[in-house]
Length: 463
Image (tube, rainbow, N blue to C red; front, side):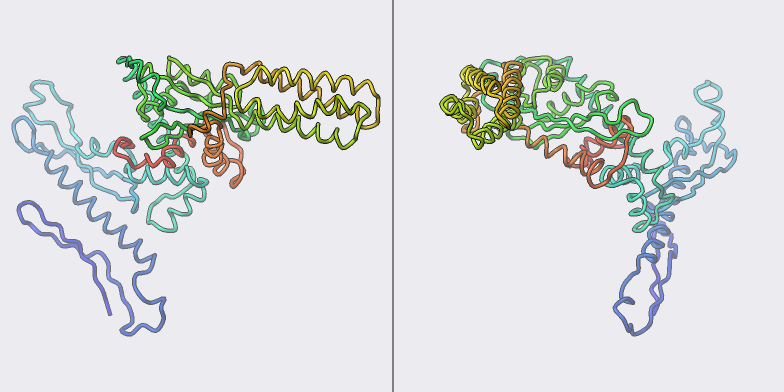
Protein backbone atom coordinates (compact mmCIF):
# COMPACT_ATOMS: atom_id res chain seq x y z
CA UNK A 1 0.00 0.00 0.00
CA UNK A 2 1.08 3.58 -0.69
CA UNK A 3 0.07 6.85 0.92
CA UNK A 4 0.78 10.14 -0.82
CA UNK A 5 0.68 13.48 0.98
CA UNK A 6 -0.07 16.53 -1.18
CA UNK A 7 -0.04 20.20 -0.28
CA UNK A 8 -2.85 22.27 -1.78
CA UNK A 9 -2.47 26.05 -1.84
CA UNK A 10 -5.60 28.10 -2.61
CA UNK A 11 -5.33 31.85 -3.20
CA UNK A 12 -7.99 34.49 -2.60
CA UNK A 13 -8.82 34.31 -6.35
CA UNK A 14 -9.58 30.57 -6.00
CA UNK A 15 -6.39 29.60 -7.83
CA UNK A 16 -5.31 26.16 -6.65
CA UNK A 17 -1.80 24.77 -6.76
CA UNK A 18 -1.12 21.19 -5.68
CA UNK A 19 2.34 19.93 -4.78
CA UNK A 20 3.18 16.30 -4.03
CA UNK A 21 5.28 16.17 -0.89
CA UNK A 22 6.08 12.57 -0.01
CA UNK A 23 4.89 9.02 -0.60
CA UNK A 24 4.97 6.30 2.06
CA UNK A 25 4.94 2.58 1.29
CA UNK A 26 3.79 -0.17 3.61
CA UNK A 27 3.06 -3.87 3.20
CA UNK A 28 -0.55 -4.69 2.40
CA UNK A 29 -0.83 -6.69 5.61
CA UNK A 30 1.47 -5.62 8.45
CA UNK A 31 3.19 -8.37 10.40
CA UNK A 32 4.57 -6.47 13.40
CA UNK A 33 3.51 -3.54 15.54
CA UNK A 34 6.58 -1.59 14.40
CA UNK A 35 5.12 -1.31 10.87
CA UNK A 36 1.95 0.44 12.03
CA UNK A 37 1.63 4.18 11.43
CA UNK A 38 4.25 6.81 10.66
CA UNK A 39 7.88 6.44 11.71
CA UNK A 40 9.90 9.27 13.24
CA UNK A 41 12.20 9.63 10.22
CA UNK A 42 9.21 9.72 7.89
CA UNK A 43 7.52 12.35 10.02
CA UNK A 44 10.64 14.51 10.05
CA UNK A 45 10.87 14.28 6.26
CA UNK A 46 7.19 15.17 5.90
CA UNK A 47 7.49 18.16 8.23
CA UNK A 48 10.60 19.43 6.44
CA UNK A 49 8.96 19.29 3.01
CA UNK A 50 5.71 20.75 4.30
CA UNK A 51 7.59 23.63 5.90
CA UNK A 52 9.60 24.26 2.74
CA UNK A 53 6.48 24.25 0.54
CA UNK A 54 4.51 26.63 2.75
CA UNK A 55 7.41 28.98 3.45
CA UNK A 56 8.50 29.29 -0.18
CA UNK A 57 4.91 29.97 -1.23
CA UNK A 58 4.45 32.65 1.43
CA UNK A 59 7.72 34.39 0.61
CA UNK A 60 7.01 34.31 -3.15
CA UNK A 61 3.56 35.84 -2.59
CA UNK A 62 5.08 38.49 -0.32
CA UNK A 63 7.72 39.43 -2.91
CA UNK A 64 5.15 39.60 -5.70
CA UNK A 65 2.87 41.83 -3.63
CA UNK A 66 5.66 44.28 -2.77
CA UNK A 67 6.99 44.40 -6.32
CA UNK A 68 4.30 46.93 -7.18
CA UNK A 69 5.29 50.47 -6.29
CA UNK A 70 3.36 51.73 -3.29
CA UNK A 71 3.11 55.22 -4.82
CA UNK A 72 2.08 54.62 -8.42
CA UNK A 73 1.31 50.90 -8.57
CA UNK A 74 3.73 50.18 -11.44
CA UNK A 75 5.71 46.94 -11.25
CA UNK A 76 9.32 47.62 -10.35
CA UNK A 77 11.92 46.12 -12.73
CA UNK A 78 13.65 42.93 -11.59
CA UNK A 79 17.38 43.44 -11.02
CA UNK A 80 18.51 39.95 -9.90
CA UNK A 81 17.54 36.92 -7.86
CA UNK A 82 19.33 35.87 -4.71
CA UNK A 83 18.65 33.27 -2.05
CA UNK A 84 18.28 33.50 1.69
CA UNK A 85 18.39 30.69 4.24
CA UNK A 86 15.99 30.70 7.13
CA UNK A 87 16.31 28.29 10.05
CA UNK A 88 12.95 27.11 11.31
CA UNK A 89 11.73 24.58 13.85
CA UNK A 90 11.11 22.14 10.98
CA UNK A 91 14.27 22.54 8.98
CA UNK A 92 16.38 25.11 7.17
CA UNK A 93 14.65 26.47 4.08
CA UNK A 94 16.30 28.27 1.19
CA UNK A 95 14.02 30.88 -0.37
CA UNK A 96 14.35 33.24 -3.28
CA UNK A 97 14.96 36.87 -2.41
CA UNK A 98 14.56 38.90 -5.64
CA UNK A 99 15.84 42.45 -5.76
CA UNK A 100 13.94 45.11 -7.68
CA UNK A 101 15.06 48.38 -9.12
CA UNK A 102 13.38 51.29 -7.46
CA UNK A 103 10.46 52.86 -9.30
CA UNK A 104 11.21 55.95 -11.34
CA UNK A 105 8.70 58.01 -9.38
CA UNK A 106 10.66 57.37 -6.20
CA UNK A 107 14.05 57.96 -7.79
CA UNK A 108 12.86 61.31 -9.09
CA UNK A 109 12.01 62.48 -5.59
CA UNK A 110 14.98 60.68 -3.91
CA UNK A 111 12.62 58.92 -1.49
CA UNK A 112 14.07 55.44 -1.90
CA UNK A 113 17.26 53.53 -2.47
CA UNK A 114 18.33 52.36 -5.91
CA UNK A 115 17.34 48.74 -5.20
CA UNK A 116 14.56 47.22 -3.11
CA UNK A 117 14.57 43.73 -1.52
CA UNK A 118 11.24 42.99 0.21
CA UNK A 119 12.26 39.49 1.30
CA UNK A 120 15.41 40.76 3.03
CA UNK A 121 13.28 43.33 4.85
CA UNK A 122 10.94 40.53 5.97
CA UNK A 123 13.62 38.06 7.09
CA UNK A 124 15.27 40.26 9.71
CA UNK A 125 16.91 37.30 11.49
CA UNK A 126 18.48 34.02 10.53
CA UNK A 127 15.92 31.97 12.46
CA UNK A 128 12.23 32.18 13.24
CA UNK A 129 11.04 33.45 16.65
CA UNK A 130 9.54 30.03 17.41
CA UNK A 131 12.84 28.24 16.91
CA UNK A 132 14.63 30.80 19.06
CA UNK A 133 12.03 30.40 21.82
CA UNK A 134 12.19 26.59 21.80
CA UNK A 135 15.99 26.55 21.80
CA UNK A 136 16.12 29.08 24.63
CA UNK A 137 13.62 27.08 26.70
CA UNK A 138 15.59 23.87 26.21
CA UNK A 139 18.80 25.72 27.09
CA UNK A 140 17.19 26.92 30.31
CA UNK A 141 15.81 23.50 31.29
CA UNK A 142 18.69 21.21 30.30
CA UNK A 143 22.33 21.47 29.33
CA UNK A 144 22.98 22.97 25.94
CA UNK A 145 24.29 19.69 24.53
CA UNK A 146 21.29 17.72 25.77
CA UNK A 147 18.94 20.33 24.36
CA UNK A 148 20.61 20.05 20.95
CA UNK A 149 20.28 16.25 21.06
CA UNK A 150 16.57 16.49 21.90
CA UNK A 151 15.90 18.82 18.99
CA UNK A 152 17.92 16.69 16.59
CA UNK A 153 16.15 13.52 17.69
CA UNK A 154 12.57 14.77 17.42
CA UNK A 155 12.55 17.51 14.77
CA UNK A 156 14.16 18.15 11.39
CA UNK A 157 15.75 21.33 12.70
CA UNK A 158 19.27 22.07 11.52
CA UNK A 159 21.88 22.90 12.51
CA UNK A 160 21.19 21.48 15.97
CA UNK A 161 24.30 22.14 18.05
CA UNK A 162 24.96 23.35 21.55
CA UNK A 163 26.55 26.61 20.41
CA UNK A 164 23.30 27.65 18.73
CA UNK A 165 21.35 26.92 21.90
CA UNK A 166 23.80 28.88 24.02
CA UNK A 167 23.83 31.88 21.70
CA UNK A 168 20.06 32.06 21.36
CA UNK A 169 19.45 31.50 25.05
CA UNK A 170 21.70 34.47 25.78
CA UNK A 171 19.93 36.55 23.13
CA UNK A 172 16.52 35.79 24.61
CA UNK A 173 17.82 36.60 28.10
CA UNK A 174 18.94 40.04 26.92
CA UNK A 175 15.47 40.66 25.49
CA UNK A 176 13.78 39.61 28.73
CA UNK A 177 16.08 41.78 30.83
CA UNK A 178 15.55 44.77 28.53
CA UNK A 179 11.78 44.30 28.79
CA UNK A 180 11.98 44.29 32.60
CA UNK A 181 14.08 47.45 32.63
CA UNK A 182 11.63 49.16 30.30
CA UNK A 183 8.65 48.13 32.44
CA UNK A 184 10.36 49.42 35.58
CA UNK A 185 11.30 52.74 33.94
CA UNK A 186 7.83 53.43 32.55
CA UNK A 187 6.12 53.24 35.93
CA UNK A 188 8.74 55.41 37.63
CA UNK A 189 7.38 58.48 35.88
CA UNK A 190 3.89 57.96 37.33
CA UNK A 191 4.23 57.63 41.13
CA UNK A 192 1.35 56.19 43.07
CA UNK A 193 0.26 57.67 46.40
CA UNK A 194 -1.67 55.08 48.37
CA UNK A 195 -4.10 56.11 51.08
CA UNK A 196 -3.57 55.21 54.72
CA UNK A 197 -5.98 52.31 54.50
CA UNK A 198 -3.93 50.78 51.70
CA UNK A 199 -0.70 51.20 53.65
CA UNK A 200 -2.21 49.66 56.77
CA UNK A 201 -3.75 46.80 54.80
CA UNK A 202 -2.50 43.42 55.95
CA UNK A 203 -2.22 42.29 52.34
CA UNK A 204 1.03 43.60 50.91
CA UNK A 205 3.67 42.16 48.59
CA UNK A 206 6.14 39.85 50.31
CA UNK A 207 9.63 39.46 48.88
CA UNK A 208 11.59 36.41 50.05
CA UNK A 209 15.28 36.45 49.14
CA UNK A 210 18.11 33.99 49.42
CA UNK A 211 21.57 33.58 47.95
CA UNK A 212 23.19 30.67 46.14
CA UNK A 213 26.81 30.06 45.23
CA UNK A 214 27.76 28.81 41.76
CA UNK A 215 31.12 27.33 40.81
CA UNK A 216 33.03 29.73 38.59
CA UNK A 217 34.89 28.85 35.41
CA UNK A 218 38.66 28.37 35.62
CA UNK A 219 40.45 31.68 35.52
CA UNK A 220 37.73 33.62 37.30
CA UNK A 221 38.90 35.81 40.17
CA UNK A 222 37.09 33.61 42.75
CA UNK A 223 36.15 29.94 42.93
CA UNK A 224 32.47 30.77 43.47
CA UNK A 225 30.18 33.70 42.85
CA UNK A 226 26.78 34.51 44.32
CA UNK A 227 23.41 34.53 42.61
CA UNK A 228 20.45 36.18 44.33
CA UNK A 229 17.16 34.33 43.96
CA UNK A 230 13.76 35.03 45.39
CA UNK A 231 10.00 35.07 45.15
CA UNK A 232 7.44 37.84 45.18
CA UNK A 233 4.05 36.85 46.59
CA UNK A 234 0.93 38.97 46.78
CA UNK A 235 -2.60 37.90 47.57
CA UNK A 236 -4.65 37.47 44.42
CA UNK A 237 -1.62 37.15 42.10
CA UNK A 238 0.41 34.23 40.84
CA UNK A 239 3.86 33.89 42.38
CA UNK A 240 6.64 35.65 40.48
CA UNK A 241 10.26 34.48 40.70
CA UNK A 242 13.38 36.51 40.01
CA UNK A 243 17.10 35.80 39.93
CA UNK A 244 20.23 37.73 39.12
CA UNK A 245 23.99 37.89 39.45
CA UNK A 246 24.67 41.31 40.89
CA UNK A 247 28.09 41.76 39.26
CA UNK A 248 26.60 41.25 35.78
CA UNK A 249 23.13 42.79 35.96
CA UNK A 250 23.26 46.36 34.72
CA UNK A 251 20.29 47.40 36.87
CA UNK A 252 19.63 44.64 39.41
CA UNK A 253 16.92 46.61 41.15
CA UNK A 254 14.97 46.87 37.85
CA UNK A 255 14.51 43.08 37.70
CA UNK A 256 13.01 43.01 41.20
CA UNK A 257 10.97 46.13 40.48
CA UNK A 258 9.46 44.51 37.38
CA UNK A 259 8.52 41.45 39.46
CA UNK A 260 6.86 43.69 42.07
CA UNK A 261 4.92 45.58 39.40
CA UNK A 262 3.71 42.30 37.97
CA UNK A 263 2.33 41.46 41.43
CA UNK A 264 0.23 44.64 41.60
CA UNK A 265 2.68 46.76 43.58
CA UNK A 266 2.67 50.51 42.95
CA UNK A 267 5.05 53.30 43.85
CA UNK A 268 4.78 54.12 47.56
CA UNK A 269 3.25 50.83 48.69
CA UNK A 270 4.89 49.10 51.65
CA UNK A 271 6.78 45.89 50.84
CA UNK A 272 7.75 43.14 53.29
CA UNK A 273 11.24 41.70 52.73
CA UNK A 274 12.22 38.40 54.41
CA UNK A 275 15.92 37.51 54.30
CA UNK A 276 18.58 35.64 56.26
CA UNK A 277 20.19 38.71 57.82
CA UNK A 278 22.45 39.70 54.93
CA UNK A 279 22.03 43.52 54.79
CA UNK A 280 22.56 43.53 51.00
CA UNK A 281 19.29 41.70 50.38
CA UNK A 282 16.90 44.20 52.05
CA UNK A 283 18.99 46.97 50.51
CA UNK A 284 18.19 45.55 47.07
CA UNK A 285 14.46 45.70 47.88
CA UNK A 286 14.76 49.32 49.06
CA UNK A 287 16.59 50.22 45.87
CA UNK A 288 13.85 48.59 43.78
CA UNK A 289 10.93 50.19 45.59
CA UNK A 290 12.41 53.55 46.51
CA UNK A 291 9.96 53.59 49.40
CA UNK A 292 9.07 51.94 52.71
CA UNK A 293 10.23 48.38 53.31
CA UNK A 294 9.43 46.19 56.31
CA UNK A 295 12.45 43.89 56.83
CA UNK A 296 11.93 40.57 58.60
CA UNK A 297 14.69 38.27 59.76
CA UNK A 298 14.12 34.72 58.59
CA UNK A 299 12.97 32.55 61.49
CA UNK A 300 14.76 29.45 60.22
CA UNK A 301 18.22 31.04 60.35
CA UNK A 302 17.49 32.48 63.80
CA UNK A 303 16.19 29.15 65.03
CA UNK A 304 19.25 27.28 63.79
CA UNK A 305 21.53 29.55 65.82
CA UNK A 306 19.41 28.87 68.90
CA UNK A 307 19.69 25.15 68.20
CA UNK A 308 23.48 25.37 68.33
CA UNK A 309 23.26 26.78 71.87
CA UNK A 310 20.77 24.07 72.88
CA UNK A 311 22.98 21.27 71.58
CA UNK A 312 26.08 22.49 73.41
CA UNK A 313 24.09 22.90 76.64
CA UNK A 314 22.76 19.37 76.24
CA UNK A 315 26.32 18.08 75.94
CA UNK A 316 27.38 19.95 79.07
CA UNK A 317 24.50 18.51 81.08
CA UNK A 318 25.63 14.96 80.27
CA UNK A 319 29.08 15.73 81.78
CA UNK A 320 27.52 16.77 85.13
CA UNK A 321 30.01 19.51 86.10
CA UNK A 322 30.41 20.52 89.78
CA UNK A 323 28.47 23.80 89.39
CA UNK A 324 25.09 22.06 89.30
CA UNK A 325 22.94 24.94 90.61
CA UNK A 326 24.24 27.52 88.11
CA UNK A 327 23.95 24.83 85.44
CA UNK A 328 20.26 24.36 86.22
CA UNK A 329 19.64 28.11 85.89
CA UNK A 330 21.56 28.21 82.59
CA UNK A 331 19.62 25.22 81.29
CA UNK A 332 16.32 26.95 82.10
CA UNK A 333 17.47 30.06 80.24
CA UNK A 334 18.41 27.96 77.21
CA UNK A 335 15.03 26.22 77.25
CA UNK A 336 13.26 29.62 77.36
CA UNK A 337 15.45 31.18 74.67
CA UNK A 338 13.50 29.90 71.67
CA UNK A 339 10.17 30.79 73.31
CA UNK A 340 11.31 34.36 74.00
CA UNK A 341 12.47 34.96 70.43
CA UNK A 342 9.34 33.34 68.95
CA UNK A 343 7.05 35.66 70.90
CA UNK A 344 9.00 38.85 70.26
CA UNK A 345 10.72 39.25 73.68
CA UNK A 346 14.10 40.07 72.19
CA UNK A 347 15.42 42.12 75.11
CA UNK A 348 14.72 39.28 77.54
CA UNK A 349 16.42 36.88 75.12
CA UNK A 350 19.59 39.01 75.18
CA UNK A 351 19.51 39.07 78.99
CA UNK A 352 19.20 35.29 79.05
CA UNK A 353 22.16 34.98 76.68
CA UNK A 354 24.23 37.20 78.97
CA UNK A 355 23.45 34.95 81.95
CA UNK A 356 24.28 31.79 79.96
CA UNK A 357 27.58 33.28 78.78
CA UNK A 358 28.43 34.36 82.34
CA UNK A 359 27.90 30.84 83.67
CA UNK A 360 29.96 29.41 80.79
CA UNK A 361 32.88 31.69 81.69
CA UNK A 362 32.69 30.50 85.30
CA UNK A 363 32.68 26.89 84.10
CA UNK A 364 35.85 27.51 82.08
CA UNK A 365 37.73 28.30 85.33
CA UNK A 366 36.91 24.83 86.73
CA UNK A 367 39.48 23.25 84.43
CA UNK A 368 37.47 20.03 84.37
CA UNK A 369 38.20 17.52 81.55
CA UNK A 370 35.74 18.04 78.72
CA UNK A 371 33.88 20.86 80.50
CA UNK A 372 36.26 23.65 79.56
CA UNK A 373 36.10 23.03 75.81
CA UNK A 374 32.30 22.84 75.74
CA UNK A 375 31.96 25.88 78.00
CA UNK A 376 34.16 27.90 75.66
CA UNK A 377 32.02 26.85 72.70
CA UNK A 378 28.86 27.74 74.62
CA UNK A 379 30.17 31.21 75.49
CA UNK A 380 31.22 31.80 71.87
CA UNK A 381 27.83 30.71 70.51
CA UNK A 382 25.99 32.93 72.98
CA UNK A 383 28.12 35.90 72.01
CA UNK A 384 27.52 35.23 68.30
CA UNK A 385 23.77 34.89 68.80
CA UNK A 386 23.59 38.06 70.89
CA UNK A 387 25.48 40.00 68.19
CA UNK A 388 23.23 38.50 65.52
CA UNK A 389 20.13 39.68 67.41
CA UNK A 390 21.57 43.15 67.97
CA UNK A 391 22.61 43.56 64.33
CA UNK A 392 19.13 42.59 63.15
CA UNK A 393 17.16 44.40 65.84
CA UNK A 394 15.04 46.24 63.28
CA UNK A 395 14.08 43.00 61.50
CA UNK A 396 12.94 41.00 64.55
CA UNK A 397 9.19 40.61 65.00
CA UNK A 398 6.63 38.64 66.96
CA UNK A 399 6.98 35.46 64.90
CA UNK A 400 4.26 33.62 66.77
CA UNK A 401 1.61 36.25 66.07
CA UNK A 402 2.59 36.55 62.41
CA UNK A 403 2.51 32.78 62.05
CA UNK A 404 -0.96 32.61 63.62
CA UNK A 405 -2.10 35.26 61.14
CA UNK A 406 -1.10 32.94 58.31
CA UNK A 407 1.76 35.09 57.05
CA UNK A 408 5.20 33.81 55.99
CA UNK A 409 8.02 34.07 58.52
CA UNK A 410 10.87 32.32 56.71
CA UNK A 411 12.64 32.17 53.37
CA UNK A 412 11.90 28.47 52.90
CA UNK A 413 10.00 29.22 49.70
CA UNK A 414 12.93 31.26 48.44
CA UNK A 415 15.24 28.35 49.23
CA UNK A 416 12.94 26.14 47.18
CA UNK A 417 13.31 28.68 44.39
CA UNK A 418 17.08 28.38 44.68
CA UNK A 419 16.77 24.63 44.20
CA UNK A 420 14.56 25.12 41.14
CA UNK A 421 16.59 27.85 39.50
CA UNK A 422 20.20 27.18 40.47
CA UNK A 423 20.68 23.73 41.96
CA UNK A 424 18.70 21.74 39.39
CA UNK A 425 20.37 23.44 36.42
CA UNK A 426 23.82 24.43 37.63
CA UNK A 427 24.94 22.70 40.83
CA UNK A 428 23.34 19.39 41.78
CA UNK A 429 21.98 17.53 38.77
CA UNK A 430 24.33 19.12 36.26
CA UNK A 431 27.59 19.92 37.97
CA UNK A 432 29.44 22.39 35.78
CA UNK A 433 31.30 25.65 35.97
CA UNK A 434 29.81 28.94 34.87
CA UNK A 435 30.83 32.45 34.06
CA UNK A 436 28.80 35.12 35.91
CA UNK A 437 27.44 36.44 32.61
CA UNK A 438 26.36 33.00 31.38
CA UNK A 439 24.72 32.08 34.67
CA UNK A 440 22.88 35.41 34.86
CA UNK A 441 21.44 35.06 31.37
CA UNK A 442 20.38 31.45 31.78
CA UNK A 443 18.67 32.40 35.05
CA UNK A 444 16.62 35.09 33.27
CA UNK A 445 15.24 32.57 30.79
CA UNK A 446 14.76 29.87 33.43
CA UNK A 447 12.75 32.25 35.62
CA UNK A 448 10.42 33.09 32.72
CA UNK A 449 10.04 29.39 31.84
CA UNK A 450 9.24 28.23 35.38
CA UNK A 451 6.83 31.12 35.91
CA UNK A 452 4.89 30.14 32.80
CA UNK A 453 5.52 33.56 31.25
CA UNK A 454 7.70 32.38 28.39
CA UNK A 455 4.82 31.76 26.00
CA UNK A 456 2.74 34.68 27.27
CA UNK A 457 1.73 37.28 24.67
CA UNK A 458 3.51 39.94 26.73
CA UNK A 459 6.82 38.19 25.94
CA UNK A 460 6.98 38.17 22.14
CA UNK A 461 10.55 37.07 21.66
CA UNK A 462 12.38 38.26 18.57
CA UNK A 463 9.10 39.45 17.08
